[in-house]
Image (cartoon, rainbow, N blue to C red; front, side):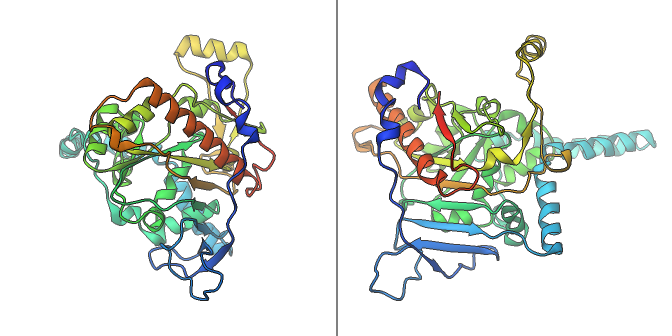
Length: 389
């Protein structure tokens, strides 16, 4: 379903009439040592006559799924880790409290010294360069394994990708807190896409809060400015982005059976990828919108809030009234790259509007088809309606 008149004429009827992606027959294979315990790996059967099918990279379709946390102590450990991680935007508050306390008890010079020691890191501009990734932390199995299993994360690769190429992984929907980023942790991304170097584009304000800034940089995030994205692609990195931006946060409604994607006017990432001769990979996220509850306000209240503060009004909560997600299941699906003759484009050449439009329309079509295919395999999204606006 397309609610944007400019593209509805081109694709309005095709989303419901095109066939879904084929569902391959899967076989469980031994879990690689690079993945945490509690994860199962399945791949498409390539040869029914063979009894030895333990290799990961001899097939396109590959799935990695975390089991539910079992037992009191395992659930407690996973819940505690998830609670700590998801509140990272508040990590700066204890730091401010410590500095204030030192000033209060007369050790103001210690506060000044700590701030001066931190300033070079804060002012380094790492988020505008290659970031400051700490791969040992991002791949740490014992830490991220329970966090990913907290919501029984399932990650699907529908096609193998050439590590010599560059990609723009465009994920939708954005949802409220972009929890789908965890699909890059605990060795999952390296298992699905070996050899691909990547960075995740994040909102600029995240890099100006101490504590929150450090975690984002350590987990391979960089500022989502166009100049940063251009440079990283030109240096051989792939990017994981959320094309809806913050607009997607306010379209997330866990009380609605309709999932709305703000994509019909988002063409900048397509132009970016084509200019750098990178392939666009449609990706979808299922189930995340149901891990938070959201308050609904009247139009008059929302209008008053927007007029006074110049920002939309959003009030949401998770488990125990915190940002800890409600128990549920999440699925992230990486699709097939959009086919484009990139050899016809010179590096840095500005793509034509016609080419950008064609790739953009194909991206929306494949995103909808991915969603329609895998929503039938997900308990919370089975009867949803997808709207692209």
